Structures are given as structure tokens and as C-alpha cells.
Length: 111
View 1: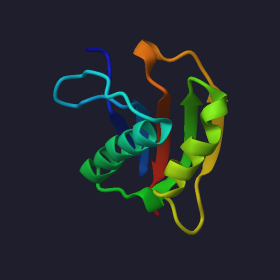
View 2 (view 1 turned 180 degrees about the vertical axis):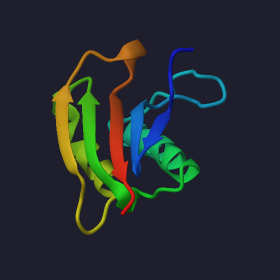
View 3 (view 1 turned 90 degrees about the vertical axis):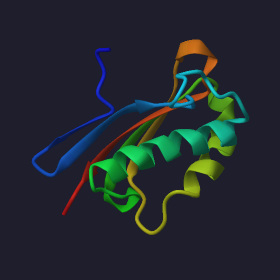
């Protein structure tokens, strides 16, 4: 597969787009926008942890929603993962693979 979950270089971690997949079966886990957002962010948390980073190290997010009308529910779930200074964020509507509702990538910097 031509994919890296994350690439680390010079104190930076670039995390590829994550979504609501079952990491064992690669099948989409369908649910509400809140459920899919929480699962997606939990996958990002696993990549962060594996590289020795945390959510506090995230400086930028790009978030893709299949339906921008889901923004409020997405934002409520997203807010559960960040406290204090939140990372810069871009949120756009996009055509997403296989009916997923949300895809998020991230950039983290270890100080």
C-alpha cells in the first residue's frame, strides 16, 4: 500500500488523513457525525502516541466533512479532544471515500 499513517522529520509529525475505519478489518465504521469524528480522532491519537507525541503537540488540522451541514455535531465531538490553545483548523466539504462522513489530517510539533 502506498500510505504512511505518519511521517516524522526534524521534530515535526505529519499525520495522513484518518477516518472512521476499523483498524483491524479496514471496513468503514458507520455512525453519527459525532461517532465518526470521535473514532477518527482516536486514530490520530494512536499515531501521535506511537510517535511520542500528544494532542497538545498538534498545531494544525485539516478536516473534511462529506456534508458541511454536519459541522455543529462535528465541532462538538472535535472539542472533546482539545483544551487550552486549540490547533489551527481548516474545515471544508469534500467528496469522501466509501461514504465516510469525516476525514482529518494533522501536523504536530514537539517543542
